[in-house]
Every structure is written in structure tokens, then in C-alpha cells.
Length: 395
Ligand code: UD1
Ligand code: UDP
Image 1 (cartoon, rainbow, N blue to C red):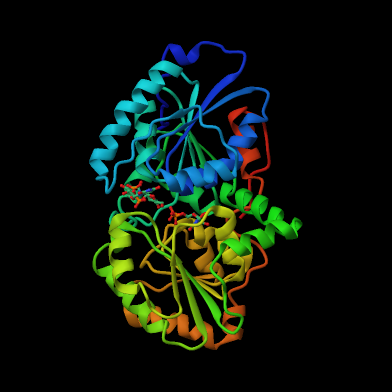
Image 2 (cartoon, protein in one colour; image 1 turned 90 degrees about the horizontal axis):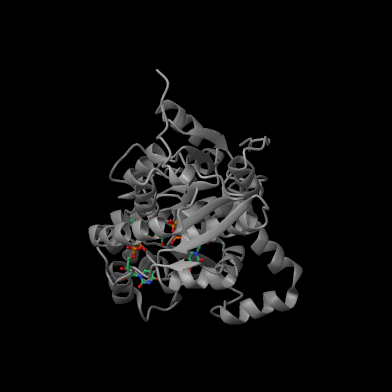
């Protein structure tokens, strides 16, 4: 049986000279991944592009907007300290609904799997405004990991009429679910963002030196373990284990650990309590994207639970150990550049130690190509919105 898309609201069928596209995002990773797309939308003569930032994140979002020179047309400023998922969702539903009523876009664009993206997709669906989902089709098929993102991403995919799958395997997930939306494989826009950033760093030695001066001084005789961690399913016992593992690793005489600590109080609490003052551990504030990419370039090993970092590291030929039991991004695991190590102390310590002690194993993590994208995802997405033919990304 064929699937029927939602009827469009009478307002969205009004013919405008240009297609009014409203991009809605609210957290650091969405902003990084939407930044190149916002640029490509603005450069398309057939599109009238506007940007709404929800402010689900505040300073971590603003860092990205400043760096990529994105002027938001609307800022809903919904963040409150230590927000709950339901409190955040409620504020988002009210604010986004008012915005949609005022601005009457022809299409709403959302990214990924955050609460912002899920609520924006639902709110647009309720107003019968077509939704396009950037980074569609990632799945673990485990509702507890990542939580609540697995549910968010599925709900958004059901509500969307355009599904921009980054890879062939995400397309296969969507096809198996018999969704109504049209599926196109575009590559992941994070590779577009990373390429823009790396070319700026590499082309401009003064800029690079300026970035290095903003980072913690790195000892030349110690190898860098770069750490990030923030996932809700790791709160509590998971973070206690991560901290214990880092404290053990810090005793090595060949290591220096740099950990830009996420602003979520549920992360900062245990991390600052357990690791402050330890030799060889630099706990620092979240870095802006240029600074963070520069640090990734210098890392010996990256230890993380981040989704975006898993997708970026292959472009930088860096080994990534992921502190999760499952990932919705299997491509780099299958290609051998990412390894899942879970959150048990001995597993984290052993995995990092092995890569610090065995260079040939570490080099085996290097890839020639990034399975997540080729730097042209944003233009493919613009072409799809304009209903132009284009060659899909072959991952
Ligand atoms: C959110 C996303 C997660 C994404 C992560 C990226 C959901 C359900 N989760 O998780 O998928 O991987 O962002 O980082 O949408 N805070 C600040 N300033 C900031 C940002 C956060 O103070 O700039 C603090 C606030 O106390 C806030 C808390 O962090 O209440 C939690 O933020 P929230 O966006 O709800 O969750 P994240 O854990 O950041
Ligand atoms: N990042 C950053 N500064 C930091 C840590 C990470 O700019 O201090 C970038 C990182 O390169 C990646 C993104 O933030 O592009 C990942 O965000 P996060 O880990 O918060 O979320 P996730 O990707 O897990 O959703």
C-alpha cells in the first residue's frame, strides 16, 4: 500500500515568488551541522531563507552562531538551567507554534534528534507545514540508547516529507520502515562544516597560531587524549566510571588529558568533583568549533560519547573510542576507525592504553575517506528542496 503524505495547509499552498524555508535548531551540534546549509540556502535565489534558534542551548549555541556569522531571525531563548525534557518541550511547543503562525513558512527544516528538532517537526506537522529532516534514518533500534534521541529521530522521520539520509545505511533503515517521505542520500553536512574549518586553519598560519594560543599549553613529550562526554544515558554510574577511568589513565607518564566539559550540570557535577586538580588533566570550558577542531588535529586518541565527533574524526584520521554500548553511526565502526568501548572502567583504561602503546594498531584506525560525507551535502539538500536532479552521495 502506498503511503499518503499530509495535506498541506491552505496557507502553505499560496504561491510565493520564492520558497520560504525556515530552519529551526537549538543546540551546539545542530548549529555546527546546519551552518553550511544555512549558507547554501541563503545563496539560492529561489529560496527565502530564515533561521530560528530556539536557545535550547545558550552559550554553546552562541559560540557557533558567532563563528559561522549566522544572524538568527528569531531567538526563542527557551533554556533554563538543568531543564527537564518535558519542561523544555512545553516551552518549545508554545514558542514554535506562535512563530509558525506569524511567519507561515512553506517548509520547515530540522536537524538530527534533539528535543528542539522533535518539537519543531511536530509543531510544523500540526500546522500541516511540510518538514524536511536533515540527518534522517540513524537508528540503534534500542529506545534506551541514545535516550531520548532514538525516539526523537524516529518521530521526526515519521512527520517529514523529505528525508535527507546521510548514508546508504541510513536510507536502508528508512526504507525498511516504509515511511511516507521521499528519501535522498546527501552525505552529512558535518563534513561540509569540518572541511570549511580545516581549510581555514590550514590556509592561515597566523589564525592557527592564534587558536593554539587559546588552547591549554600542550607538553611536547606527552600524547594528547582528548575527551568529551555528555550523554544522558551515561548520567550517574556511567560518568562515575568515566571519571575513575580518566583518573587511572592520568597516572601514565606519557599522557596529557584535555576535557572540555559540557555545561550540563549533571555532567559538570561529577566531572569537576572527581577530576579537578589531577596532574595531567586539563578540565576546560567548552571550546568553540575552530578551537575544538584544532585540538582534534593534535590528539593521539579521542575518547567520547558524542555523535558528531564520531563523524568528524575519520576526516582527521584520528582513532575514536566511543563510551557507548551501541551507536546509530555504524559506518565508521565497520570501517575500523571508531571502536565502541562502553563505560566500564577497565574497558576504557585498557582500550586507551593499547592505542597509546601500539602505534601500528593506532595507525590502522586511519581512513582515506570519510564514510559520512564528501563536503557537498548542503548543496544536495538545497537541490532537493528546489526539486532539481542531482547525484546522491555514494557512501
Ligand atoms: C542536548 C541534546 C543531545 C545533544 C546535546 C549536544 C536533547 C534531548 N539532547 O543535550 O541530543 O547531543 O544537546 O550537546 O535534545 N547548558 C547551559 N548552557 C548551554 C547548554 C546547556 O548551561 O549553552 C546546561 C543547562 O543547564 C541546560 C542543560 O545544560 O538545562 C541541559 O541542556 P539540554 O539541551 O537539555 O541537554 P544536553 O544534555 O545539552
Ligand atoms: N565540539 C565543540 N566544542 C567542544 C566539544 C565539541 O565545538 O568543546 C563540537 C564537535 O566537534 C562536534 C559537536 O561539537 O561537531 C558535537 O557536539 P556534542 O558532542 O555536544 O553533541 P552530539 O554530537 O553528541 O549530539
